[in-house]
Amino acid sequence: MRSGNAAVNKIFDDIIPFLPEKVRQAVSYLDLSVLQGIEEIRLRAGKPVMLCCFGKDYFLSEAGHVDNEPTNFALTVGDLNDMVFRICENSYYAYQDEINKGFVTIKGGHRIGLVGTPVVENDRIINIRDISSLNIRIAREIIGFGDGVVKSIFRNRRDIYNTLIISPPGMGKTTLLRDIIRSVSSGVENIFDGLNVGVVDERSEIAACYRGVPQNDLGYRTDVINGINKKEGMEILLRSMSPRVIAVDELGNPDDVYTVLKVMNAGVRILATAHGFDVTGLKKRAGFKELFSAGCFERFIVISEKKEFRYELKVTDGEGNVIGVDCKSRRQPADCGKLDNGRLYILPLSDREDRIYSRNPVLFNGTGK
Picture 1 (cartoon, rainbow, N blue to C red):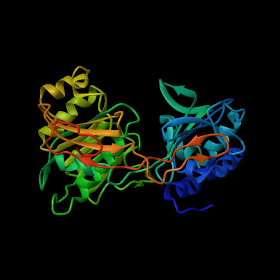
Picture 2 (cartoon, rainbow, N blue to C red):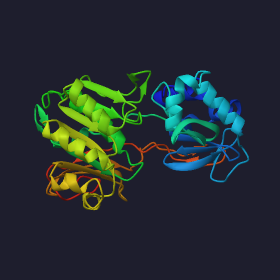
Picture 3 (cartoon, one colour):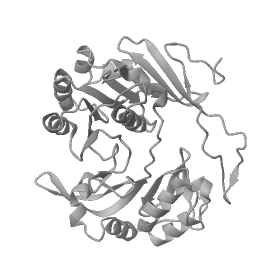
């Protein structure tokens, strides 16, 4: 089944062929407006199949409906293990390292997390058997998501400020990091020339490499080291690729602090993300105190959810002064209608309305007044 929607086509081309037969049929019955909003498909042995859609969790029925109430549509451990076997192209051995880490990245950059019973040898996981849960995370890059804030991190046409992106889980910090990497790498016409960027993609979430090839657009001048811890990855990039910028996702391990300082002392800029709600809270956490004491970061981008907006992206400098605020509106399109999929009414995804207020500490309302 093909549609004019790229997100829907990716699900049919990349995801559906791996699903258990009865889930494959149920998902294919879903209305296209539901399909384009799916963020995760969660499969648990003996539990109802669930979809994370439009930011909420729903239960999937065998007839292809979604509901707020649990259904009796469930899978067995055998169903899940058969699915993993298909994902691994009938060879667990070829994907053993990824399985041991708890996830497999498939074509299209989609990541399938898995848990079960670990097989441990010499304090090291060598396999996972009796897989009991799978989480299929649908990969979607949002080109232009960072356009409203990326100019705030440019120092000049050939340099950027060391920047830390802060947000709670699930608010889009990796999506924003990815889009900023693309702009820094490829450049912005008449504003920024572009720099060599090295990316340490520890969990294959930034570039989403499949067989060594990034599935996401990270720009023309980007080199990716995949599936390695941040400390070793940053050191390898410094030695081998002469990057002007190194990008990492989810700083927080105290072991990474020394290497981040080493990178900055080498004159290389840092783009990084961290879980948190604000700069003040992050300063108190282990692994960040040293970085803040050294004044490592010159720009902070804090992502939060506001009553009036889907997202607020606030940029501040190292002293807390607001550089700009970019808002993504919750406002529905004028032609927005409700979707009746047989069980539940779901609103389509809200459109985006970008508003950037340069060097203004006041967040204006959605009308720009």
